[in-house]
Image (cartoon, rainbow, N blue to C red; front, side):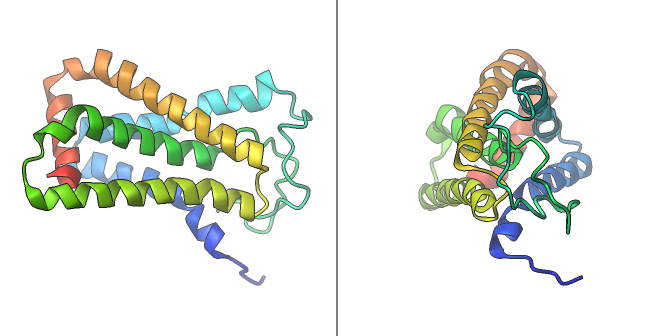
Length: 194
């Protein structure tokens, strides 16, 4: 079978790379913060599945993928995906969830602590790259005919909502009570922000 992968398929690997990277960092460093992020990445499937299969009928026009949806994930290489519900786009959800969490942490917790002038340039570059990647993922899902525009936009909105829920409720009100979690969070963001 011929491999017809495009740049859009490569960009769509973002979700797999994020989950793999957080898994390796969590286990390798026994980092509770990244384990929390990893749990949220996996847990985001709960609201997605509720929307796709309970709230919306699978035959609802919002849920129907483009008629030529093919090879829409790594596992489905060579298979049609048009019958699978597509609202919201899970890849878009992950991209915007991680962007939201990263931006929130930088703006609320780390921005005022950065004194080094070299980092004043590094941080905007990291955030711009994350933002461009977050935009590229939904665009790639649309361009590869795996989702409609409303499906990728809804995935982006759901990702922002889940990201804010994680940072404001789970992280701030629950997990931040544990000293190891706070220390591990500082270690993780220290790699990026310091």
